[in-house]
Length: 471
Image (cartoon, rainbow, N blue to C red; front, side):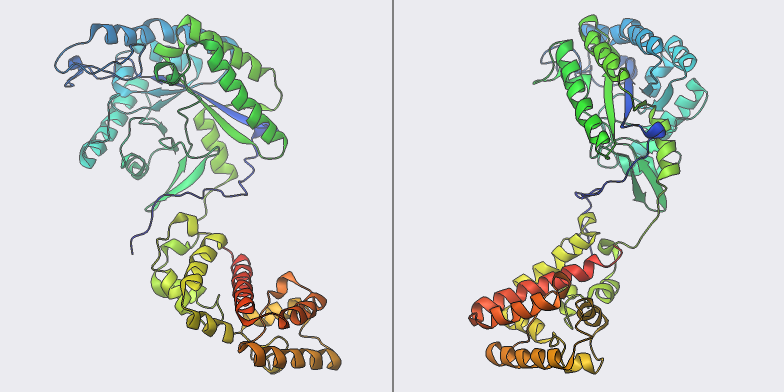
């Protein structure tokens, strides 16, 4: 059975407390992309010049030619922009993660030496700063291996983090399968790190950003002055900081490029933001490696059985009893487009209830008639399902006086005679008194209205049963 692979649920309504060091309200990851010297260029064996992320409006690749203006803009990043940023971050003592293109690092020995002297984390940004979307899987795997080899040769140790950027649909899986990365960042889907199961590998993912990113200086619509960049970073920080004060700390990634933010008029906005964030207590500036180490120690991954990954027999075994004596609902639900969003009680509830709602009236009537009478003869004979026994006991229906039992029996008889199915109510939402009140109220309804209400109560009972499971 093919399953829908995208995870549109994530942590849901209750994200974990990251427990950042020092009880920080927000963790800030500053990232500097070092791509200059690794971009598309016929000198690098590429078919055309670069056209991405520069100050040239409407830039296009020049097949078979060098693009002198584009090259010199990239060269500014390595020659001037990098050193301006190096002075800023070392003066403020703010840690930095480098996304280093391996071939670019190999062409920048002085800059690599400065990164190492500053104690910055140097992660891999791939072998070359080129598009990967059409790259064959085997070729991308080869380039990942070569990027690691060259990075290790240039830097002195293998990269522990990875970000391709211009990635393919295979990139995250391939980098996880490589097995040596503490973190990978080719996603933009959360405000917190999370674990990804890739085969036998539990891979930590630290999502990145394309909006709190100086690349917007080179796109439209985007930033046109440093103040706009500062304001966006400040607004993002203020929102996350406030959430942290409310007990929901998050992570904030900021993406930078030497040739963009390294220009004088742009870097002023970055400096304002760093000064602003540093003026607040409870802020943890950290490399992505430090964030990864903290997360792995504080929130280690534990694998669990996931509904969307169960086979048919197991799915029906686990969920076949959610709707009273009606395993056909689970059997049909298994055929739906299930995915990570269904690996929770709400997700399974949604799949099952879709089948119940789309069933014929006769099938839904069969589900209604499968339910026992409240406090009826089956209960007295202890012949209820485990779920029904627990539910009836939660409202005290297992400890009725003789008078109360006689009242329930009379109401049950009258209700069944009128509607042709037993009275059904989600007892976990009620007390003995409210159940009796609902009994008398619903006896006065027409059959069509009561059939609809009984079906809604069946859905609610199923929700409670799933909510009690460890999913």
